[in-house]
Image (cartoon, rainbow, N blue to C red; front, side):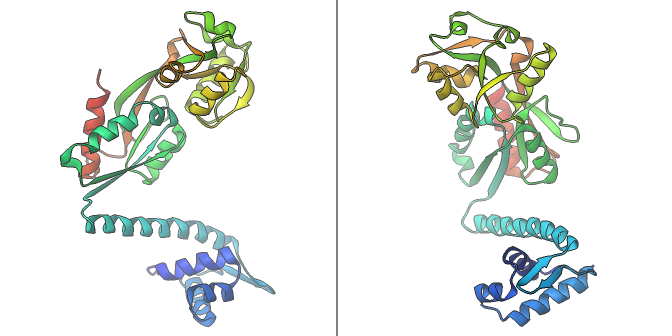
Length: 300
């Protein structure tokens, strides 16, 4: 197959999105016949029809849908290349992309990254962090959408190189008037009778809790579903339910709110996080520096 033309792919995506060649021609200030010619050449290149002409426009064929997915990925990568090169042109000599879980983002990572960037030797390095659940962190590193991931080390990290980062300790957070708040510590099975504030089903904490409840032959009683720890803590403060939150996240909140943090005594309540990447040798120099810094920050 001959090299695919990015401009043609961009026009193909635009036509698929708008379902109308004339509309794209107007938006791009290109005559419609030129777009049609490019699309015909694209179909010739891939050797199969990509669009079906209809009375009021066009629609992608099954092959067109497949190409559309690949085209979006290629255009996104091309855009990232452009942004990276622009970063070098403006003096930024490194851009490190990270995928991290909510627990890592809510706890110490921001401070660790801030300390790294405050080093004058790192003034030309840019870091972007995107929050994902653990399976998506792993998938993103495998697919190359980021160079570094940090997630719970119980995730399926096969095929990736890993380094230990930090750990946290899960605890029950309850309103001060709640019966659980009066306990010095508690086993998870002993609080399953109460209603919970829950996180999304694929989050590391929620997966762990569902598994622990299943071992006891029980299920969690969900009263409220939220998307992050901050929202969960606010629901607890309103005395609507209890929640399981990393102690490192909950304690600063509890210092100024009428809630209590009760440690979980279960062995699985202490979690470890791992830094993961495809290959240490393939990491860019800026990414290698960041990994080394995070390893040092995570040591006791």
